[in-house]
Every structure is written in C-alpha cells, then in structure tokens.
Length: 193
Image (tube, rainbow, N blue to C red; front, side, top):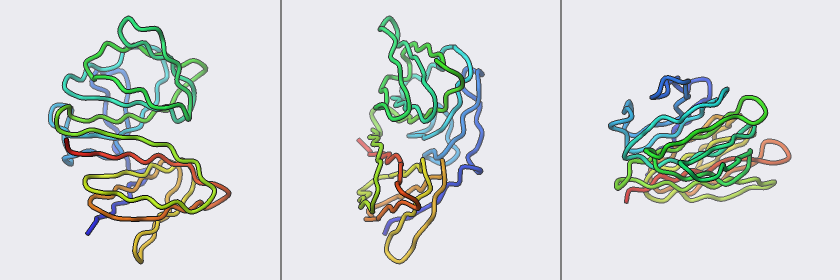
C-alpha cells in the first residue's frame, strides 16, 4: 500500500546553502530531518540572484533544472552550459567545482541530490492536455506541480498548485489531470541502488 503526502509550497522549509550564499526551500528529504552529511536524497527549490560558486557536496550526485529564468553554469574547465525553463536537467557530481550566474535576472531552480552508491534519481518534465497515468513503483516518487493540477489514486484525490508537490512512497498507480487547459509537472523518481 502506497503512502501519499501532499507538500504545500508555503510549507517548504527554508534551509541555508552550505556555502552561506543563499537559501533553498526543501520540498522533501530522506530520511526526514537529514542534513548534507546524512541525507539519502533531497529535492529543493532555490532562487539564484547573483553569480557565484555552488556548494561543494562530496558524495552526492546532483540534477539541476531551471523552473524560471536562464542560468549559465560552468562545470570545472568545461564550456558554460545555459539552462532555461524546460531544458533537460544538468547532472553532475556534488564535489565538482561549479560556477553559475543568472543571465537575465533571478532564476528559480529545482535541485535533486542523491547519496552516491545508495540512491539514484530520474527526472522527467511532463506537459499534457489530458489525463496522464503514472505508476510509482518501489522507492519514492515526487510530482512537482508547475500548474494547477489534480492527482487521483484509488478513491482519493488531491489538488496541487504551483510548486506544491505530492510524495508517493511505495507501489501505486495514479492519474494526473489538468485543472485548466494543460498540466505541467515534474516526475522525480528516487530509487535505491
């Protein structure tokens, strides 16, 4: 039996960046209450307002997607990668030297971290105009809403607004429906390796 938990955007805990350069809003972390040295995985949303380095997070793998704005990222000596909303997430090791700068004003990004050797993540952006079925499978799955939408499982249903999330732990088939003309959302899967 799967457990479904709705994580409202207004309740996402504010957590300082490890390097002190800003604040991220924690959507979900496993185990609950874990910090950088003890987490197995974490999903968070941050706003990048100025240029600077990313925190060094040894032992963690990261995926970063842009939700709003445009962000230029340099990984080590590699040429800059420019990410905008809807672009595939950038995957990189947490200990890699990373410099980033917003291109045209503040950037809101989605950060996914997994403990290397214990968990892996998969991220998919969905943009649909009709009902979409999703199966959670083993492990944990998060649906992060970028528009108003409805999530239905068995006899229950939940309404999500912008940056609300639903966390599903365990095997479950559910349906996502647009509240308006379309539904836009991320599906984030956390799998034990």
